[in-house]
Length: 431
Image: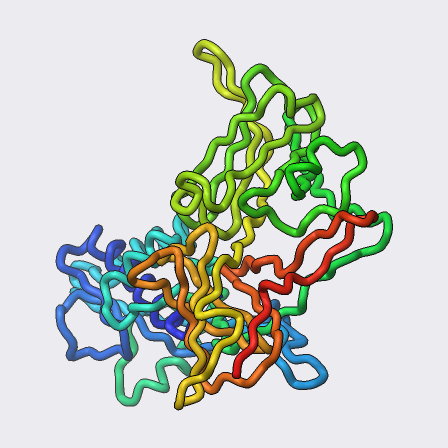
């Protein structure tokens, strides 16, 4: 998803693509964003004008329902838009500059119709007014396709330009641009129990060697034949058990790659924790060594790597995503927090592993979603200022880092069977 700067970012990126194409055939050609103007300069130029914005038919209602029966937002409203652009070409008629530029633009947009992340990032860096645009992080990429516009339709388009004579032009559609609302969304608490025999979801993927499913549990679960229900995500200090086929070997490791940050960890698998259908690794403890700097909350991909001797290439399995959940460490000034004279409550949470500056961190408390700021004096801590904080007693808190939430519960194994209970140490009272 992207924010309100998405449309302007698409226009700027398209202008750069068109400018590069035009300059490849006409030296000094430029692109002007706005209505066609015969008096503009330079003489050989292209006017790029966004003349119409329409809802995308396929995705216009994909985010429904957005609110629950009591009016609370359950999904951030998202507008799906198609952008219609008119490209008007001006140049020397004797040297057919307009036609040459048109041909170059059609050539480049046909061969490379998609705005890549690098193109968008370059556009954002080129214009200060685009600072804060996150279109480069959007899942849906914007693709340009030419519109089949008849002479009658083209004459109607040009009729909106008062007393501007027609120039050689072509229309393109950019689709799809998703603009997400800034509204806060409070997700439901995690399910603590899903039936007596529910073992969770197995992910079936290929090719060979094959990871079929992943189990997250306590280190003691590694030796059990019948394991309790898997935790919803990995955490530092927990055991990760990979189940599949043909995952054994003489030198096997499990590689973790962060999907957003340049973080990669290669954990070797001991032969005692390895079989043809299963391997087990234990993530480092939250307070051990460099775990705070080597890891970060968020989405990782894991791959089984069978290392070969000599010059042979390593054999890798399929790659599947997992979530590394943040851990709430110390809560400052404590679990009881007093509001100041303006009604603001300030909470500082130590996150394990630490949150990076490139990540988004929120505190979920009493139906609110509060944006956090990394402490300037201690990067392990995140500060949250809750304006107009409500008075709550024993409210459960959670951290959400790049969409991955902390786990506000503990697993209790004694007496059996294992069960889940909310963690009393992750509750706060605001007075």
